[in-house]
Image 1 (cartoon, rainbow, N blue to C red):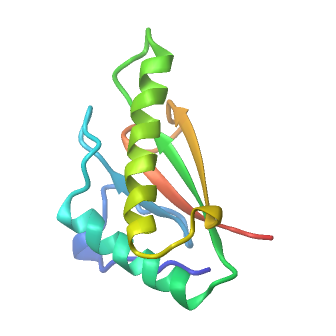
Image 2: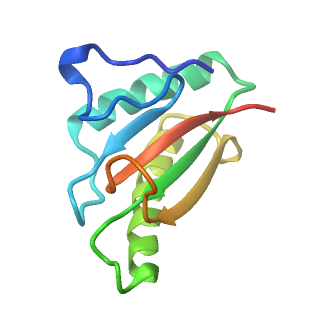
Length: 119
């Protein structure tokens, strides 16, 4: 599945690699912004058009260096918020894998990456 890259004026500070979409959250936040909802609507449309495709939600959170489990809970909450939104758009749960990774090894620390999966 090929996710469309937004126009340069609406890009996040770091451009994700082709095929991957990064949704950036404010520290401590789990709610979707209107821009995120629009991007997720595009993802849902692409998934509806390509029924064999799957995605992986890789979630990260910052601010809890001494409490990794708290960071993992926050990152999981973000991924589940995105998953719930996509479920509401008619995307089956079996097409989405969720991974709460807590800390990011690169890129913005408060984000969820939506990565197309290959079979």
